[in-house]
Image (cartoon, rainbow, N blue to C red; front, side, top):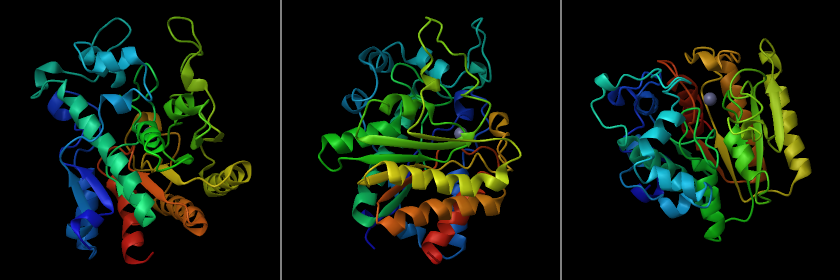
Length: 336
Ligand SMILES: [Zn+2]
């Protein structure tokens, strides 16, 4: 397999937080741990993995999804304020939360370049999936970003950005987003509610963030986080044993409702895992076996229909976040 036949895309630099003075418990080396575990198991990662060095996603791609004034802020002196907002580093009184600029070794503004690199991995994994049937990105899945603001650690919505670009390029007409991250894909649902080319399914914690957000924004307009996905599947705490059958019903419902898509983006997320350390993901607690069953279900559903699928790592926090990703990828490349 040549380097241009890679099936796993990773950014040359990760969206790490600690070096920016941000105290979010995402493990900077989860990708490295996943890839090391694959290599250890005998997967030829040297040939499968492409390191993405330069952003392929730029301002014009963002403008297909985000408002002109938000995009203008991101590419001007408004960037820092927008990053503080998206990573939720400021409280209502203007004080810093989970952020200590004194500990930063890099300017916050460099985070945007890293986000654009992650979004580029999303786009490349989608392109590659259209050729090969499937591909994986070790970044992306920024499903909470809305048209005019970011939140939930998501600055731009790479999922919709990649899909709108593929539609504009004439490569696809219809896509689905299957979001199995612990949190509702609120940004993706809101951005695509009037877009007949993109349908969304989100299975997520029935309570907690972002569903706990107030019904209106500070300006009095309805909060877009409450806009429904095409198919929403809330899972209540303690009902993890029903997760797989609920997901199966939801996927079947989407297939009954809509014609088959040209591409599916899976917002993959390891944060439903019981060993995830993010407090806001604690209401969903799947075992490693249940995580693997989830991934197999999605995989087989799409493979059986011959629908190309691009998997984005999305959420997954703490020292064990790599384990569900690794389990499934080992199966794909060694047994699938
Ligand atoms: Zn999440």
